[in-house]
Image 1 (cartoon, each protein chain N blue to C red):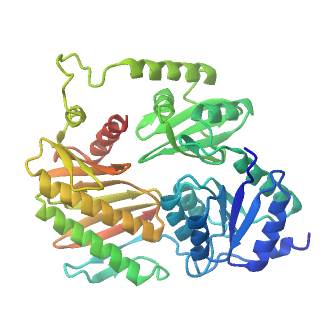
Image 2 (cartoon, helix red, strand yellow; image 1 turned 60 degrees about the horizontal axis):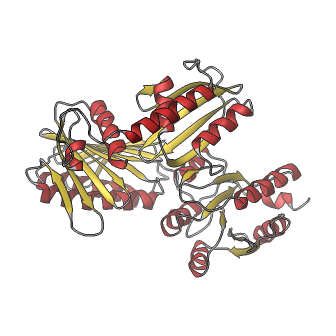
Image 3 (cartoon, rainbow over the protein chains, first blue to last red; image 1 turned 90 degrees about the vertical axis):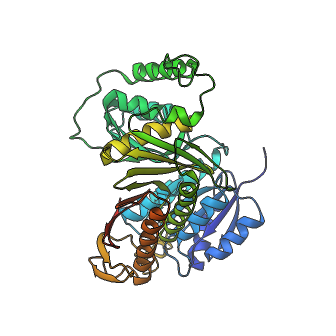
Length: 355
Length: 95
Protein backbone atom coordinates (compact mmCIF):
# COMPACT_ATOMS: atom_id res chain seq x y z
CA UNK A 1 0.00 0.00 0.00
CA UNK A 2 2.80 2.40 0.85
CA UNK A 3 4.80 1.86 -2.35
CA UNK A 4 5.38 5.06 -4.25
CA UNK A 5 3.90 5.47 -7.71
CA UNK A 6 6.28 5.64 -10.64
CA UNK A 7 5.68 8.15 -13.39
CA UNK A 8 7.47 8.07 -16.70
CA UNK A 9 7.72 11.42 -18.49
CA UNK A 10 8.36 11.37 -22.22
CA UNK A 11 9.28 14.52 -24.11
CA UNK A 12 12.04 15.15 -26.60
CA UNK A 13 12.85 18.50 -24.98
CA UNK A 14 15.18 17.88 -22.05
CA UNK A 15 14.55 21.32 -20.53
CA UNK A 16 10.79 20.75 -20.54
CA UNK A 17 11.24 17.33 -19.00
CA UNK A 18 13.09 18.96 -16.11
CA UNK A 19 10.30 21.51 -15.64
CA UNK A 20 7.67 18.77 -15.53
CA UNK A 21 9.80 16.79 -13.15
CA UNK A 22 9.82 19.73 -10.75
CA UNK A 23 6.05 20.12 -11.02
CA UNK A 24 5.40 16.44 -10.39
CA UNK A 25 7.75 16.31 -7.43
CA UNK A 26 5.26 18.53 -5.64
CA UNK A 27 2.47 15.97 -5.92
CA UNK A 28 1.13 14.94 -2.50
CA UNK A 29 1.74 11.27 -3.28
CA UNK A 30 5.42 12.02 -3.94
CA UNK A 31 5.84 9.70 -6.90
CA UNK A 32 9.15 8.59 -8.32
CA UNK A 33 9.76 10.45 -11.58
CA UNK A 34 11.60 8.85 -14.48
CA UNK A 35 12.24 10.60 -17.75
CA UNK A 36 12.88 9.71 -21.36
CA UNK A 37 13.53 11.92 -24.37
CA UNK A 38 12.73 9.35 -27.03
CA UNK A 39 9.97 6.80 -27.60
CA UNK A 40 12.44 3.93 -27.82
CA UNK A 41 13.97 4.86 -24.48
CA UNK A 42 10.53 5.16 -22.89
CA UNK A 43 9.48 1.73 -24.10
CA UNK A 44 12.73 0.21 -22.88
CA UNK A 45 12.10 1.74 -19.44
CA UNK A 46 8.52 0.45 -19.39
CA UNK A 47 9.85 -2.99 -20.26
CA UNK A 48 12.33 -2.89 -17.43
CA UNK A 49 10.01 -2.07 -14.52
CA UNK A 50 6.33 -1.44 -13.72
CA UNK A 51 5.06 2.15 -13.89
CA UNK A 52 1.82 3.69 -12.71
CA UNK A 53 1.59 6.36 -15.37
CA UNK A 54 3.13 7.45 -18.66
CA UNK A 55 2.91 11.12 -19.59
CA UNK A 56 3.85 11.60 -23.21
CA UNK A 57 4.29 14.49 -25.59
CA UNK A 58 2.84 14.01 -29.08
CA UNK A 59 5.18 15.86 -31.35
CA UNK A 60 8.56 14.14 -31.28
CA UNK A 61 11.09 13.21 -33.95
CA UNK A 62 11.56 9.60 -35.11
CA UNK A 63 8.79 7.98 -33.07
CA UNK A 64 5.94 10.41 -32.37
CA UNK A 65 3.64 10.24 -29.36
CA UNK A 66 0.83 8.43 -31.18
CA UNK A 67 3.25 5.72 -32.30
CA UNK A 68 4.51 5.33 -28.75
CA UNK A 69 0.94 5.12 -27.44
CA UNK A 70 0.06 2.47 -30.02
CA UNK A 71 2.89 0.28 -28.78
CA UNK A 72 2.20 1.04 -25.12
CA UNK A 73 -1.51 0.18 -25.40
CA UNK A 74 -0.62 -3.18 -26.90
CA UNK A 75 2.26 -4.08 -24.60
CA UNK A 76 1.06 -2.51 -21.36
CA UNK A 77 -2.75 -2.38 -21.52
CA UNK A 78 -3.11 -1.64 -17.79
CA UNK A 79 -0.73 1.31 -17.78
CA UNK A 80 -2.40 4.65 -17.31
CA UNK A 81 -1.46 7.09 -20.03
CA UNK A 82 -1.74 10.83 -20.35
CA UNK A 83 -0.86 13.07 -23.25
CA UNK A 84 0.42 16.56 -22.62
CA UNK A 85 1.00 18.50 -25.76
CA UNK A 86 1.08 21.89 -27.39
CA UNK A 87 -0.54 20.44 -30.52
CA UNK A 88 -4.02 21.94 -30.23
CA UNK A 89 -5.85 19.89 -32.82
CA UNK A 90 -9.14 18.07 -32.36
CA UNK A 91 -8.10 15.24 -34.68
CA UNK A 92 -5.05 14.32 -32.59
CA UNK A 93 -7.13 14.57 -29.43
CA UNK A 94 -9.74 12.21 -30.90
CA UNK A 95 -7.08 9.79 -32.09
CA UNK A 96 -5.34 9.77 -28.74
CA UNK A 97 -8.60 9.08 -26.91
CA UNK A 98 -9.44 6.41 -29.51
CA UNK A 99 -6.26 4.66 -28.41
CA UNK A 100 -7.57 4.54 -24.87
CA UNK A 101 -5.52 7.23 -23.14
CA UNK A 102 -6.79 8.42 -19.76
CA UNK A 103 -6.12 12.11 -20.11
CA UNK A 104 -5.36 14.62 -22.85
CA UNK A 105 -3.96 17.92 -21.62
CA UNK A 106 -2.60 20.96 -23.31
CA UNK A 107 0.73 22.07 -21.94
CA UNK A 108 0.02 24.48 -19.10
CA UNK A 109 0.53 28.17 -19.79
CA UNK A 110 -0.60 29.75 -16.57
CA UNK A 111 -0.13 29.06 -12.89
CA UNK A 112 -3.77 27.99 -12.73
CA UNK A 113 -3.22 25.50 -15.55
CA UNK A 114 -0.14 24.12 -13.82
CA UNK A 115 -2.23 23.61 -10.71
CA UNK A 116 -4.96 21.91 -12.78
CA UNK A 117 -2.36 19.67 -14.41
CA UNK A 118 -0.94 18.63 -11.04
CA UNK A 119 -4.44 17.91 -9.68
CA UNK A 120 -5.32 15.79 -12.71
CA UNK A 121 -2.16 13.73 -12.42
CA UNK A 122 -2.69 13.21 -8.70
CA UNK A 123 -6.26 12.11 -9.40
CA UNK A 124 -5.04 9.59 -11.98
CA UNK A 125 -2.51 8.18 -9.52
CA UNK A 126 -5.10 7.93 -6.78
CA UNK A 127 -7.03 5.27 -8.61
CA UNK A 128 -6.24 1.65 -8.18
CA UNK A 129 -5.51 -0.20 -11.40
CA UNK A 130 -8.56 -2.26 -12.18
CA UNK A 131 -9.54 -4.65 -14.91
CA UNK A 132 -13.02 -3.39 -15.66
CA UNK A 133 -14.76 -0.07 -15.74
CA UNK A 134 -14.57 2.71 -18.23
CA UNK A 135 -11.26 4.28 -19.14
CA UNK A 136 -11.55 7.96 -19.72
CA UNK A 137 -10.90 11.11 -17.77
CA UNK A 138 -11.58 9.00 -14.74
CA UNK A 139 -12.03 5.26 -14.51
CA UNK A 140 -15.45 4.78 -13.02
CA UNK A 141 -18.56 2.79 -13.71
CA UNK A 142 -20.93 4.32 -16.21
CA UNK A 143 -23.56 4.76 -13.52
CA UNK A 144 -21.05 6.75 -11.42
CA UNK A 145 -20.23 8.99 -14.36
CA UNK A 146 -23.88 9.69 -15.13
CA UNK A 147 -24.65 10.40 -11.49
CA UNK A 148 -21.68 12.75 -11.27
CA UNK A 149 -22.84 14.69 -14.32
CA UNK A 150 -26.38 14.97 -12.96
CA UNK A 151 -25.44 15.82 -9.39
CA UNK A 152 -23.02 18.51 -10.51
CA UNK A 153 -25.81 20.09 -12.60
CA UNK A 154 -23.62 19.73 -15.68
CA UNK A 155 -24.47 20.59 -19.23
CA UNK A 156 -22.34 18.30 -21.35
CA UNK A 157 -22.28 15.38 -23.74
CA UNK A 158 -20.96 12.04 -22.55
CA UNK A 159 -19.49 10.02 -25.39
CA UNK A 160 -19.08 6.32 -24.63
CA UNK A 161 -17.23 3.85 -26.81
CA UNK A 162 -17.48 0.10 -26.37
CA UNK A 163 -15.49 -1.78 -29.02
CA UNK A 164 -17.18 -1.13 -32.32
CA UNK A 165 -20.12 0.63 -30.66
CA UNK A 166 -20.43 4.17 -29.56
CA UNK A 167 -23.13 6.23 -27.99
CA UNK A 168 -23.78 9.68 -26.61
CA UNK A 169 -25.76 10.91 -23.65
CA UNK A 170 -26.76 14.58 -23.45
CA UNK A 171 -27.05 16.45 -20.14
CA UNK A 172 -28.56 19.87 -19.61
CA UNK A 173 -28.30 21.55 -16.23
CA UNK A 174 -28.02 18.17 -14.55
CA UNK A 175 -30.95 16.60 -16.42
CA UNK A 176 -30.43 13.68 -18.72
CA UNK A 177 -32.21 14.88 -21.86
CA UNK A 178 -31.28 12.58 -24.73
CA UNK A 179 -29.23 9.55 -25.77
CA UNK A 180 -28.20 8.02 -29.05
CA UNK A 181 -26.45 4.81 -30.00
CA UNK A 182 -26.19 3.56 -33.56
CA UNK A 183 -29.78 3.78 -34.82
CA UNK A 184 -31.34 3.95 -31.35
CA UNK A 185 -32.48 7.15 -29.72
CA UNK A 186 -33.87 8.27 -26.39
CA UNK A 187 -34.41 5.91 -23.48
CA UNK A 188 -33.81 2.77 -25.57
CA UNK A 189 -30.41 4.09 -26.59
CA UNK A 190 -29.64 4.99 -22.96
CA UNK A 191 -30.44 1.45 -21.84
CA UNK A 192 -28.25 0.03 -24.59
CA UNK A 193 -25.33 2.23 -23.54
CA UNK A 194 -25.81 1.33 -19.90
CA UNK A 195 -25.64 -2.38 -20.72
CA UNK A 196 -21.99 -2.01 -21.79
CA UNK A 197 -19.62 -3.17 -19.11
CA UNK A 198 -16.34 -1.69 -20.34
CA UNK A 199 -15.09 0.92 -22.76
CA UNK A 200 -13.87 4.48 -22.98
CA UNK A 201 -15.69 7.66 -22.25
CA UNK A 202 -15.12 11.30 -22.98
CA UNK A 203 -16.93 14.41 -21.81
CA UNK A 204 -17.64 16.75 -24.71
CA UNK A 205 -18.88 20.33 -24.62
CA UNK A 206 -22.61 20.91 -24.12
CA UNK A 207 -24.95 21.12 -27.10
CA UNK A 208 -27.60 23.56 -25.83
CA UNK A 209 -29.73 23.23 -28.97
CA UNK A 210 -30.22 19.48 -28.48
CA UNK A 211 -33.92 18.58 -28.26
CA UNK A 212 -35.11 16.79 -25.18
CA UNK A 213 -36.46 13.27 -25.77
CA UNK A 214 -36.00 11.83 -22.28
CA UNK A 215 -38.31 13.14 -19.58
CA UNK A 216 -37.83 10.55 -16.83
CA UNK A 217 -35.53 11.35 -13.95
CA UNK A 218 -32.02 9.95 -14.18
CA UNK A 219 -32.55 8.02 -10.93
CA UNK A 220 -35.62 6.31 -12.41
CA UNK A 221 -33.79 5.51 -15.63
CA UNK A 222 -30.79 4.05 -13.82
CA UNK A 223 -33.08 1.94 -11.65
CA UNK A 224 -35.09 0.65 -14.62
CA UNK A 225 -31.94 -0.14 -16.56
CA UNK A 226 -30.42 -2.01 -13.62
CA UNK A 227 -33.61 -4.08 -13.25
CA UNK A 228 -33.70 -4.84 -16.98
CA UNK A 229 -30.07 -5.98 -16.89
CA UNK A 230 -30.73 -8.21 -13.88
CA UNK A 231 -33.74 -9.78 -15.60
CA UNK A 232 -31.75 -10.33 -18.80
CA UNK A 233 -29.06 -12.12 -16.81
CA UNK A 234 -31.67 -14.51 -15.42
CA UNK A 235 -33.00 -15.53 -18.83
CA UNK A 236 -31.63 -18.60 -20.64
CA UNK A 237 -29.53 -17.75 -23.67
CA UNK A 238 -31.38 -18.40 -26.89
CA UNK A 239 -34.63 -19.08 -25.08
CA UNK A 240 -37.09 -18.44 -27.87
CA UNK A 241 -39.71 -20.92 -26.87
CA UNK A 242 -38.65 -23.44 -29.50
CA UNK A 243 -37.82 -25.99 -26.82
CA UNK A 244 -34.85 -28.31 -26.70
CA UNK A 245 -32.45 -25.43 -27.27
CA UNK A 246 -30.06 -26.46 -24.55
CA UNK A 247 -27.53 -28.05 -26.90
CA UNK A 248 -27.67 -25.39 -29.62
CA UNK A 249 -24.21 -24.23 -30.74
CA UNK A 250 -23.40 -20.65 -29.73
CA UNK A 251 -22.82 -19.81 -33.40
CA UNK A 252 -26.26 -21.14 -34.30
CA UNK A 253 -27.84 -18.79 -31.78
CA UNK A 254 -25.99 -15.90 -33.44
CA UNK A 255 -27.24 -17.03 -36.82
CA UNK A 256 -30.90 -16.68 -35.88
CA UNK A 257 -30.92 -13.04 -36.91
CA UNK A 258 -32.65 -12.20 -40.17
CA UNK A 259 -30.49 -12.37 -43.27
CA UNK A 260 -27.59 -14.27 -41.70
CA UNK A 261 -26.28 -16.97 -44.04
CA UNK A 262 -23.20 -18.21 -42.19
CA UNK A 263 -21.10 -17.53 -39.12
CA UNK A 264 -17.41 -18.33 -38.65
CA UNK A 265 -15.43 -17.73 -35.46
CA UNK A 266 -11.69 -17.64 -36.08
CA UNK A 267 -9.17 -18.04 -33.29
CA UNK A 268 -6.20 -15.69 -33.49
CA UNK A 269 -3.52 -17.93 -31.96
CA UNK A 270 -3.84 -21.17 -33.84
CA UNK A 271 -5.36 -22.17 -37.13
CA UNK A 272 -8.62 -23.24 -35.49
CA UNK A 273 -12.03 -22.00 -36.50
CA UNK A 274 -15.62 -22.87 -35.80
CA UNK A 275 -18.29 -22.44 -38.42
CA UNK A 276 -22.02 -22.60 -38.83
CA UNK A 277 -23.72 -23.12 -42.17
CA UNK A 278 -20.74 -22.14 -44.32
CA UNK A 279 -20.09 -24.18 -47.46
CA UNK A 280 -16.40 -23.35 -47.59
CA UNK A 281 -15.33 -22.31 -44.11
CA UNK A 282 -11.63 -23.06 -44.52
CA UNK A 283 -10.73 -20.50 -47.20
CA UNK A 284 -13.01 -17.91 -45.61
CA UNK A 285 -11.49 -18.39 -42.15
CA UNK A 286 -8.02 -18.02 -43.69
CA UNK A 287 -9.12 -14.85 -45.49
CA UNK A 288 -10.60 -13.46 -42.27
CA UNK A 289 -7.43 -14.13 -40.27
CA UNK A 290 -5.09 -12.63 -42.88
CA UNK A 291 -7.26 -9.66 -43.77
CA UNK A 292 -8.00 -8.63 -40.20
CA UNK A 293 -4.31 -8.93 -39.31
CA UNK A 294 -3.27 -6.77 -42.27
CA UNK A 295 -5.88 -4.09 -41.63
CA UNK A 296 -4.97 -4.01 -37.94
CA UNK A 297 -1.32 -3.47 -38.89
CA UNK A 298 -2.35 -0.74 -41.32
CA UNK A 299 -4.34 1.01 -38.60
CA UNK A 300 -1.44 0.79 -36.18
CA UNK A 301 0.91 2.17 -38.82
CA UNK A 302 -1.27 5.26 -39.29
CA UNK A 303 -2.32 5.50 -35.63
CA UNK A 304 -5.92 5.33 -36.80
CA UNK A 305 -7.02 3.60 -33.60
CA UNK A 306 -8.60 0.22 -33.13
CA UNK A 307 -10.12 -1.59 -36.10
CA UNK A 308 -13.75 -1.81 -35.04
CA UNK A 309 -15.23 -3.62 -37.98
CA UNK A 310 -14.53 -4.66 -41.53
CA UNK A 311 -17.45 -4.92 -43.93
CA UNK A 312 -17.50 -6.28 -47.44
CA UNK A 313 -20.37 -6.04 -49.89
CA UNK A 314 -20.48 -8.47 -52.78
CA UNK A 315 -22.72 -9.84 -55.53
CA UNK A 316 -23.07 -13.22 -53.81
CA UNK A 317 -23.14 -12.23 -50.16
CA UNK A 318 -22.09 -9.49 -47.76
CA UNK A 319 -19.68 -10.11 -44.90
CA UNK A 320 -18.87 -8.29 -41.68
CA UNK A 321 -15.93 -9.12 -39.43
CA UNK A 322 -15.30 -7.93 -35.87
CA UNK A 323 -12.69 -8.81 -33.26
CA UNK A 324 -13.27 -9.69 -29.67
CA UNK A 325 -10.16 -10.36 -27.65
CA UNK A 326 -8.17 -12.94 -29.51
CA UNK A 327 -10.88 -14.07 -31.90
CA UNK A 328 -12.51 -12.73 -35.05
CA UNK A 329 -16.16 -13.27 -35.86
CA UNK A 330 -17.15 -13.29 -39.53
CA UNK A 331 -20.83 -13.20 -40.43
CA UNK A 332 -22.11 -13.72 -43.96
CA UNK A 333 -25.34 -11.95 -44.88
CA UNK A 334 -27.75 -12.40 -47.76
CA UNK A 335 -26.85 -10.04 -50.61
CA UNK A 336 -30.31 -8.45 -50.54
CA UNK A 337 -29.60 -6.82 -47.16
CA UNK A 338 -28.77 -3.14 -47.29
CA UNK A 339 -25.51 -1.92 -45.80
CA UNK A 340 -27.39 -0.23 -42.95
CA UNK A 341 -29.23 -3.44 -42.16
CA UNK A 342 -25.98 -5.42 -42.23
CA UNK A 343 -24.45 -2.97 -39.77
CA UNK A 344 -27.46 -2.97 -37.50
CA UNK A 345 -27.77 -6.76 -37.45
CA UNK A 346 -24.04 -7.12 -36.92
CA UNK A 347 -24.15 -4.86 -33.88
CA UNK A 348 -26.87 -7.05 -32.35
CA UNK A 349 -24.87 -10.18 -33.13
CA UNK A 350 -21.72 -8.73 -31.60
CA UNK A 351 -23.58 -7.78 -28.43
CA UNK A 352 -24.81 -11.36 -28.09
CA UNK A 353 -21.39 -12.78 -28.96
CA UNK A 354 -19.64 -10.58 -26.42
CA UNK A 355 -22.04 -11.63 -23.68
CA UNK B 1 6.73 31.48 -13.37
CA UNK B 2 8.97 32.47 -16.28
CA UNK B 3 9.40 28.81 -17.07
CA UNK B 4 5.85 28.80 -18.43
CA UNK B 5 7.11 30.47 -21.59
CA UNK B 6 9.15 27.35 -22.07
CA UNK B 7 6.04 25.22 -22.04
CA UNK B 8 4.18 27.18 -24.67
CA UNK B 9 6.94 27.84 -27.14
CA UNK B 10 6.19 25.04 -29.56
CA UNK B 11 3.30 24.71 -31.99
CA UNK B 12 2.30 21.76 -34.16
CA UNK B 13 5.41 20.48 -35.82
CA UNK B 14 6.20 18.30 -38.76
CA UNK B 15 6.55 15.09 -36.75
CA UNK B 16 2.86 14.14 -36.73
CA UNK B 17 1.05 13.04 -39.86
CA UNK B 18 -2.60 14.08 -40.02
CA UNK B 19 -5.03 11.46 -41.23
CA UNK B 20 -6.08 12.74 -44.64
CA UNK B 21 -9.51 13.40 -46.09
CA UNK B 22 -9.93 12.56 -49.75
CA UNK B 23 -9.89 9.77 -52.26
CA UNK B 24 -7.58 8.13 -54.75
CA UNK B 25 -8.00 5.76 -57.64
CA UNK B 26 -5.84 2.78 -58.51
CA UNK B 27 -5.58 0.90 -61.78
CA UNK B 28 -5.49 -2.93 -61.70
CA UNK B 29 -1.69 -2.80 -61.50
CA UNK B 30 -1.82 -0.78 -58.27
CA UNK B 31 -0.66 2.49 -59.85
CA UNK B 32 -2.30 5.67 -58.61
CA UNK B 33 -4.35 7.19 -61.41
CA UNK B 34 -5.89 10.13 -59.56
CA UNK B 35 -5.83 11.48 -56.04
CA UNK B 36 -7.47 14.24 -54.04
CA UNK B 37 -5.40 13.51 -50.94
CA UNK B 38 -3.26 16.33 -49.58
CA UNK B 39 0.37 16.32 -50.65
CA UNK B 40 1.40 16.25 -47.03
CA UNK B 41 0.21 12.65 -46.80
CA UNK B 42 3.18 10.51 -47.86
CA UNK B 43 2.87 8.72 -51.21
CA UNK B 44 4.28 5.56 -49.64
CA UNK B 45 1.31 5.46 -47.27
CA UNK B 46 -1.11 5.84 -50.17
CA UNK B 47 0.57 2.97 -51.99
CA UNK B 48 0.44 0.83 -48.86
CA UNK B 49 -3.30 1.37 -48.46
CA UNK B 50 -3.92 0.76 -52.16
CA UNK B 51 -1.92 -2.46 -52.20
CA UNK B 52 -3.78 -3.80 -49.17
CA UNK B 53 -7.19 -2.99 -50.63
CA UNK B 54 -6.41 -4.60 -54.00
CA UNK B 55 -4.97 -7.73 -52.38
CA UNK B 56 -8.03 -7.95 -50.11
CA UNK B 57 -10.38 -7.88 -53.09
CA UNK B 58 -8.24 -10.55 -54.79
CA UNK B 59 -8.02 -12.82 -51.75
CA UNK B 60 -11.77 -12.49 -51.14
CA UNK B 61 -12.38 -13.69 -54.70
CA UNK B 62 -10.06 -16.63 -54.06
CA UNK B 63 -12.00 -17.45 -50.87
CA UNK B 64 -15.22 -17.50 -52.94
CA UNK B 65 -16.67 -14.39 -51.38
CA UNK B 66 -16.12 -11.85 -54.17
CA UNK B 67 -16.53 -8.29 -52.92
CA UNK B 68 -17.19 -5.04 -54.71
CA UNK B 69 -17.03 -2.75 -51.70
CA UNK B 70 -14.96 -2.80 -48.55
CA UNK B 71 -15.33 -0.63 -45.45
CA UNK B 72 -12.69 -0.62 -42.72
CA UNK B 73 -14.04 1.13 -39.68
CA UNK B 74 -11.25 2.37 -37.40
CA UNK B 75 -11.74 4.38 -34.23
CA UNK B 76 -10.29 7.48 -35.90
CA UNK B 77 -10.67 6.77 -39.60
CA UNK B 78 -13.16 5.30 -42.04
CA UNK B 79 -11.74 3.69 -45.17
CA UNK B 80 -14.18 2.87 -47.95
CA UNK B 81 -13.02 1.11 -51.12
CA UNK B 82 -15.00 0.26 -54.25
CA UNK B 83 -13.74 -2.12 -56.85
CA UNK B 84 -13.35 -0.64 -60.35
CA UNK B 85 -12.67 -3.28 -63.00
CA UNK B 86 -9.71 -4.75 -61.17
CA UNK B 87 -8.62 -1.42 -59.74
CA UNK B 88 -10.26 0.52 -56.93
CA UNK B 89 -11.36 3.91 -55.72
CA UNK B 90 -10.57 4.47 -52.07
CA UNK B 91 -12.06 7.11 -49.78
CA UNK B 92 -10.43 8.16 -46.53
CA UNK B 93 -12.41 10.08 -43.92
CA UNK B 94 -11.02 10.81 -40.45
CA UNK B 95 -13.57 10.94 -37.66
